[in-house]
Image 1 (tube, rainbow, N blue to C red):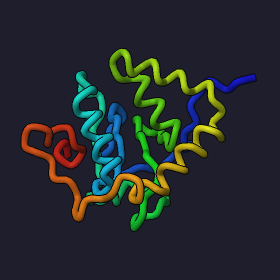
Image 2: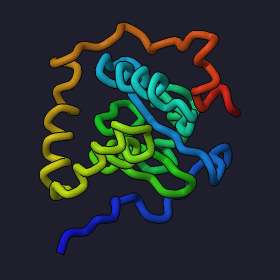
Image 3: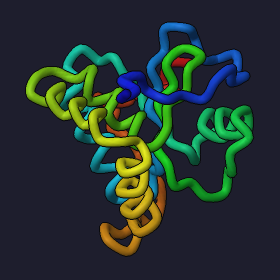
Image 4: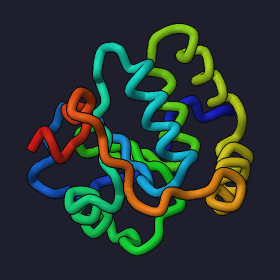
Length: 154
């Protein structure tokens, strides 16, 4: 039987600044692939469902610490929805499910077993700097997109 549900980290204790209705996408702001992903979300999340949070920001560091995750290196994407935390391919597919058509169609990737999806995800994630490069410093959002970032919302 196929498990159609997304896997998430159960019962996380998150910082108080995260509200139950928040949908936060954590990303590595020095990774060119990750900043490209954040730009994709800014462009295609037309209903502005998601807030972005760099793992290097004070808020990102607080979230990682609260989850018991490393704060000095990061090789997975996280999606925080209220008090549910999705990671790796589950985070990616859950985000795609909530974007407008045609991107919602990509959520059908759930039918692929999680172990296979996460293997492919990890294969890219651990090589992302080599494959795509990295910025010498964190991306600084322009004034017009600043509202899309978690640290602006606090």
